Length: 122
Figure 1 (cartoon, rainbow, N blue to C red):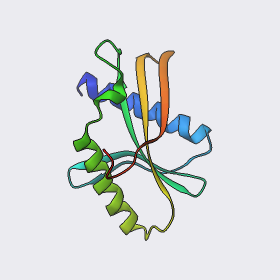
Figure 2 (cartoon, helix red, strand yellow):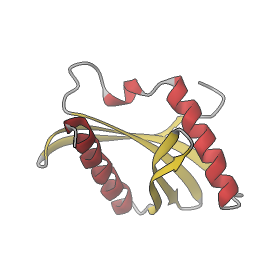
Figure 3 (cartoon, one colour):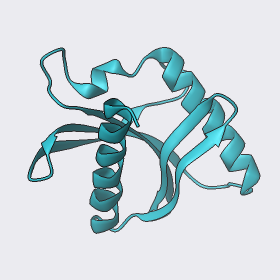
């Protein structure tokens, strides 16, 4: 498996653990809809949260969250709509980012960006 895929999986595992420790109920990981993949779908109290995780080995070329494009936001929004329809959603939603700089298992930085964007305003 390619190094960048393994790095991404490590970052996503850290993000799942982080959210679970914060009391989030993890509903799905790597949920796919057409060309989109939502890294983590969770509930934070009564809020349905769609989370994109970006992991890099270094921030030399910029912070991981800076690589989330408007196209990616549109794909996340479409996938979120499909998921909400699937589960007959009728409560509040939120889109978050988790940024991970991962040097090794004992040396990483994780940042959580709540309400990172609102659909239609990007």
